[in-house]
Amino acid sequence: YTKIVPHERIEYAFGERAAQVEFTQLPQGVQVRVTFDAETTFSPEQQRQGWKAILDNFARHVHAKG
Image 1: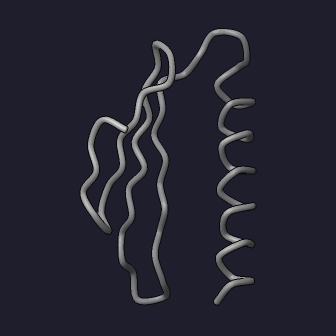
Image 2: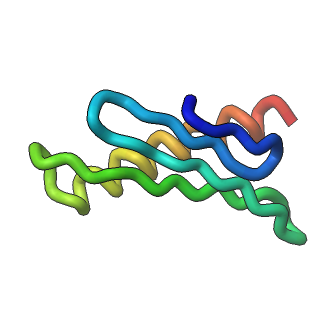
């Protein structure tokens, strides 16, 4: 992890790439947004779908705990 702002942002590096996770409080809950450096093996759309699947699994986990 390269930067952590509690309840707001997590930044981290993995290999030569980096990602940022932002948490935004909304009236209906917390929005989680991930921004990442794309890699060259898979298309941007495939990467977007992969990260979305990770976030969807995380949302299911959080809802099951709450």
